[in-house]
Length: 237
Image 1 (spheres, rainbow, N blue to C red):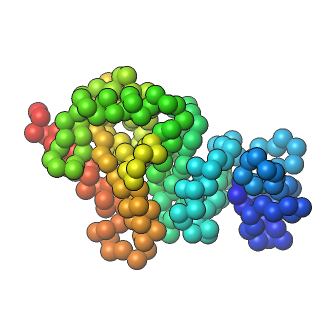
Image 2 (cartoon, rainbow, N blue to C red):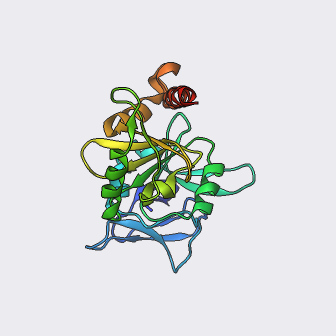
């Protein structure tokens, strides 16, 4: 974790500092070595949030795009279940940065737990993913200039196959240039719609959420894109 509670206040890890977990209130120790990024860890091998994964520099870089008060927010459900959201914006969107493989059952659990969830998926973990994705794009059909791309099938693209069908918006970060790729719609055995999305715009639209008009919020943007895909599909029938 990036933050722990030290005398009731959030602090980043520092040498010789001790704190308590914001989820389970158990003791934590600051891990400040020379190899891994500085972080907090529970004493012993305790893991209080099974959804949490070891942080990488990729995680930290993405989190750093947002105010500290939005990072690592403990999200409570009415049932009493609680998990640490990577980022929770002032508009209630939870942004989860996923580096490692995530099994479909856990992904569906997270989709259901967070009412307004956005995934940002690391696309550099497997070297073949970007080449497979690029090949899939080459088979696709653009919907208007700079618009979504309809891919007739994506059986050979593992990362699309893993993430298509999520109820939450999914953005893939291939680490290439300023562009993320948004999986708009699809299913394993159906055409998939993807669209390029500016990395800086992704950050700005969330950071400026509370100051924007309703028409310019991320939620409105999601609805507008969905309508565009539905309109295109209706012409294919």
